[in-house]
Image (cartoon, rainbow, N blue to C red; front, side, top):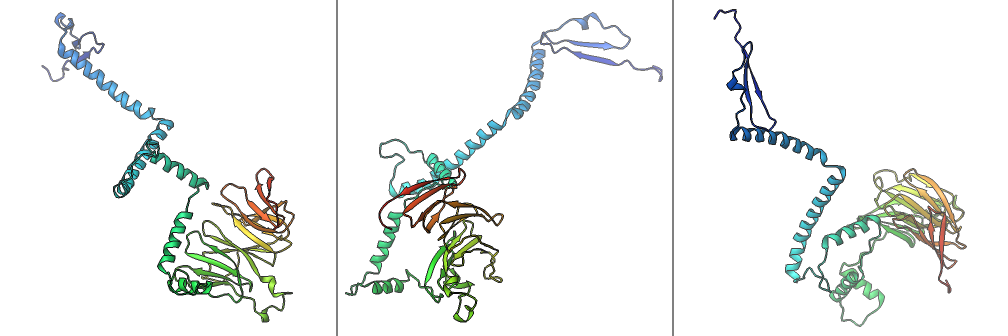
Length: 364
């Protein structure tokens, strides 16, 4: 064959229609033989066709399965994984207690107890601020055990003698630092710090573990009270701490609410971040809304003022009491509850701009 001559190219055609394999050999410039045009059926060709079809469909199925997992199916899958995790934790934690106490997984009626469901419901209530815990019995048992451990055979049963027994047993610790009588106290959320205010105008931060103290506001001495009409003008009446242990609110007879940053107390000059004014008479009670930085203050002027410490601003005033306000508190739901000397308890629906009045009757 001359070098310049081109070699004929072969073309291969495969019929995948499923009606029997067909193979054609076509050479350029040459007519295929009749033998090559005939359809040849065989089991091997059928198997090959089925394999090719299956390969194509399997690839499509894998791609479709990845695309078909929608947001709902993903949430369902994650929920199942979370439940499996909770069940594993419950089984591991309850296994030890059951082996020790011989407790069963049935309630009093013999029905099985859904421990995972109870745990989820408890967690939901805790996050919403509606979880109620029964602790009175456990606290009473602890007090009774301490009393039995310090039982004294002496005949002196006075309060002073009992107090000395508790102090000697180190169940009670006296912390001294105020010049005059303390009037209010607040414990941090973590329980490591305590704040106390007194009639001398001083505010002290205490370390609960070792009893060390840090003075936030010094006491007003006689020689420093020249500019005050009365020394009691600086008397501290209310203290509150936020749930995140970030802010400390202080109120007193100066008609003001002062806000401190607890993270800087004792590290620099103890000066307030801001001072909220507006009350006409002494501030008698303070309360933070649970899990937020909303602050409520009650006063002898019969008003409740609301502040937003995220922006360090005053928000609104709540009117309704006919006598000085004694105490106030607020749960996670924005409905503060207050009591006053008018012998009423009021639940304030702040978002609806209304409130409920409960009258107990009787003397104050």
